[in-house]
Length: 173
Image (cartoon, rainbow, N blue to C red; front, side, top):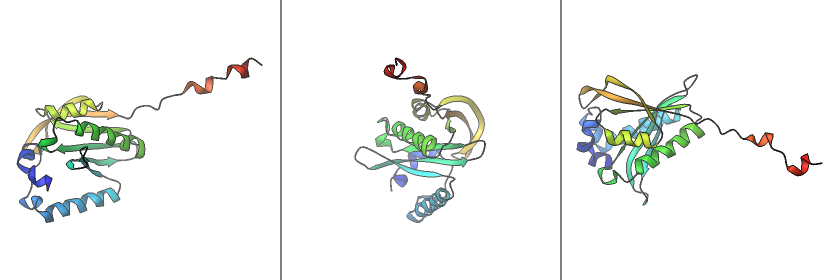
């Protein structure tokens, strides 16, 4: 329902979609497709909720690659009425916990249109670093467009120096 309501606003930021995509059947098919990818370990589809537990967007961990790469792509959108409230930034930080913790991934990447400053800010607030620009990277709104490329590497585990510490009472004996 919210996806359909945001159709016109999101169109300049997404690939062109068949009109069927915006029907109930199209959305049910999309959910089924994402759940199949999730069952196969290739995608983690999520919804973004606000403080009242209302759905205000989507976030997806997609193209999960295992082996030596241990990486995935993030994608997200937020409804117009929820923009600027920090829900996307908070959701992305939660997604990082899932990706780096639960899934054990090493790297996340995000790509935005070079003029989509709001999306770039979301990535940067979550610790993503811009590492390049890709001309004609994705076909968005019917044409190949340039994208800013971002990545976030899993934090190194915090090393504890506890192994080098001893109770003073044990050493004084």
